[in-house]
Image (tube, rainbow, N blue to C red; front, side, top):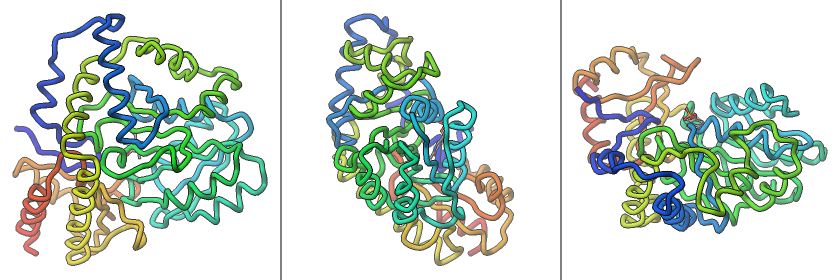
Length: 354
Ligand SMILES: *Cc1c(COP(=O)(O)O)cnc(C)c1O
């Protein structure tokens, strides 16, 4: 039986979207395919408050993270690390031979802008990687403050993993000077996995021209060349593009601001419940608006709770990696509604006898 997903990726997908996935195939060099690609551009640009091109990667988010650091770093990249995914970005840079260094802090603390300022003042760096919403810890880093600091350094590329935030939280790409903003669609877009949405600034494209290519598949100038014809260099995930188009229409119909408000309301509801019965993992003021990472203060067995919830056809997530039993996570993103959240938390109250 299907378990309704309250996991922070993949998230629950609506039947209408599943339907769109089974649209009959079109050829990727046909006019219909270019029309579909072109149709998506203004919708995605509106969502991201940008006029920059949006590239579609046939890969999960990790592929786009790899593309970001391999295409835009000439000198050295500063990897901001306070969780599993931000740590992954550093590993990706290392494995690709991209010069890099970490600024690492404790996982339950947000990365503050002044720390970054101190680092960048050395002039060693020409790129910074930031995971806006750390899905491993349910922590949202202060994007606005960080953007302000990075904008003081004109040569520094601002690379942002917005995987579990995009389409759930407002991200003003152009105003914040974000050079690459990426997100896989299986999180707040509420689509099946396999496609990543990536905005790319003119500066990033320029830099990519100057960097020795490390990859054929993850090659921004090549992708941009095809983008201008509303195509991609390789066969795209056409089915997912149909689904994304259907979903973007729904998102615009709901209203993007309304969508962000809905996410905010769900987050506040879960956070209040979390503080009543448990505690929240990240430091106060930096709680994610798309998922909540609970501190397991009652020392419940997260595995047992998950199993019980499974019997009721729902699924939440345990803690990520080293936080497996110390925390657990509930996603409130995508097409999830507040009633779904109220139902889930009520069920947990019953199971745990709270
Ligand atoms: C899920 C996630 C990723 C990795 O996504 P994949 O689709 O598994 O490649 C990266 N960053 C963040 C913040 C995520 O939530």
